[in-house]
Image (tube, rainbow, N blue to C red; front, side):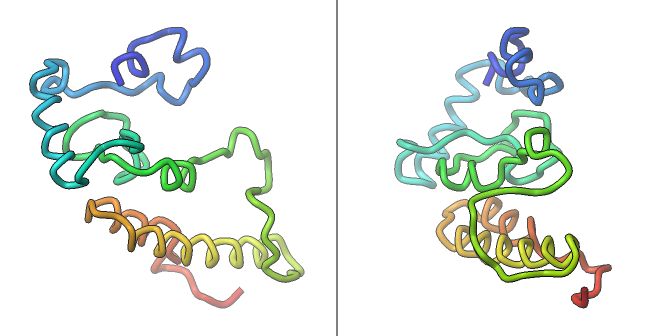
Length: 148
């Protein structure tokens, strides 16, 4: 966590961490350890889990107790934004969802499928904050019609 926020070599490899910071409370390891112990009680064990700063709030850049959570690698990989690698069009694991006339219709089919899977992952989460975030992440925005 500290390396991701403070290392120039890390920033060169992963520029998304350039603006990240660690809250003052967690700069003292004993405070971070108290939070870790609470997370261990919540999850039973942290083995195989990854610390994530933006699973609850995708715009978050601060490692802090309110915004961080431990998640499985499958959930972490599921929500990773690969936009800088994909170019103009979204991509992912190849799944046939049908044929569509416009890119917008195809994207809507993708969003619906992503939302369904996101809700299934949410059902497996013990951290209610993560589950809520997953249920909302790919939901249709309230100001949009479902017609394409």
